[in-house]
Amino acid sequence: MQVFLSEPRGFCNGVQNALNLLDEALAKKLKLSVLNEIVHNKTIIKNYQDKGVVFVKDLKAVPNGGHIVFSAHGVAPDIRRQAAERNLQIIDATCPLVKKVHREALGFTKHGVYIIYIGHHKHEEAAGVYGEAPQNITIIENSADIPLIPRDKKQYAALTQTTLNITETAGLIAQIKKIFPGLIEPAQKDICYATAARQEAARNIAAKTEAVVIIGSRNSSNSARLKEVVEAQGRPAYLVDNYRELPAEIKQYSKVGLTAGASAPEYLVRECLAFLQNAML
Ligand code: SF4
Image (cartoon, rainbow, N blue to C red):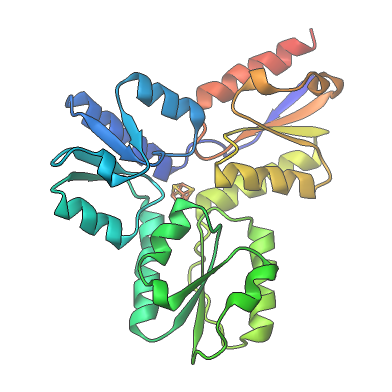
């Protein structure tokens, strides 16, 4: 089997910074709680749990005055308020590119522009941005949600989650523009460079292989989008946390691409590479 490694793949700067912050806090022997998952990767979460980090779904689970880490996906201002009221010590690992979208949401709201936020209803990143101005934002996930957008606003702007499928999002924005021709798109697209570059690389690797393995967790938005990109090229895509989850059918291919979502550690890619290369011996 020939294995083609996609480049770039794996950790983006936002994930690496979040993990560095957590490691620095652990090195100070702080007792840490993290709100939700620091990044969406099962292996990483398990490794930190083994080091004593507690992952919570609600701030109420954190003792008064304790240390709370906000994940790379960011939080709504209400969560920050609650943390301040409880005197929690905040370690903020929000990715700067997510913070940028929060600032854009605030800016549009201040200027009376209604926001159409394209993202996944249940994702923490979407919830965080929505929390900046719930009265001024509609979250839409796909074209079926377009009717949810109120029609009585003077001006509209689109913002997006940072980890969306670039092609699908462009199509959705084009559909929205037909209904709201004056739609303002952010000068700089919100889908981050890391997401865009990994999708482009996955598309290229799919074009020269028979199937692509994506190392990442299923709840990782950017990893799931890599799977979609590969499948859109007509290739089977296997999204797995590690090589042990690969089905036996992987052995039928002679050319396989290998990539990883932005929250997947490189050592899992290397393990998978070794497995795939040995699988054919
Ligand atoms: S995928 Fe992009 S927005 Fe998300 S953490 Fe990484 S760099 Fe930041």
